[in-house]
Image (cartoon, rainbow, N blue to C red; front, side, top):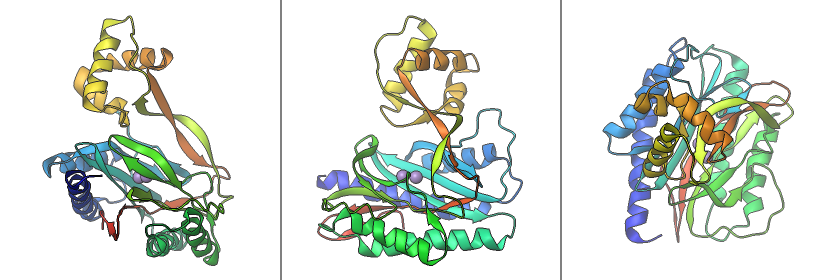
Length: 294
Ligand code: MN
Ligand code: MN
């Protein structure tokens, strides 16, 4: 990354940090997820960033990939994960926190465990460290609290307009000796009382562009052009497309999915249907490390 790119990553992180404080201040039990998502996304734009992906608001055993649809009536409750991203010219800050909305002791312990695991992982993170050692710090921290990390979810490198690129940061000691290089990384431990794996659930309404090849239907083509221009390869959601093109565009999205222009993400559900907490920060690894989202 050059100087300008690093500045964009830092700026995106500053916005994410401010939006995180804002979100923590207004999210309450029984608030519609739709209202929460729209408030967070508007605030990102107001502060001069763009959402790097739709706000994920995943409750209890849903670990990730729940974003409200345009007509969603779900309200905030239980153990809520709030995961959102900001980008400036494609340089991303990816951040997440968890909230206990039912005053439950186990929720609070799970949240503390993911926060502590993240802190321990960040302390380990530096240029040249074997990647498995970051995973080990996460696993040891979570297991010492009597919980399990989710082993098939992980942190990731981020590159320009690429949310998941290059290096993977595991949530367990995978013994990888590959060394951490300069770049932008998200570290995101997930903690559960369950078995520690997720499987694919229902379609989420979150998509990303995989192929801009031609599609016959003119309205599908119009949506595809917009996606390519506006989001490039970053994830987006049906709610955003409905806002721009109206409800009929849901049919265009279906065509684009069937034509394999778009990848459709599914909800990620904890295998034993136990609760999950998540904490995430973005780290710029250079000669020194900077937590851009802190
Ligand atoms: Mn995230
Ligand atoms: Mn992430």
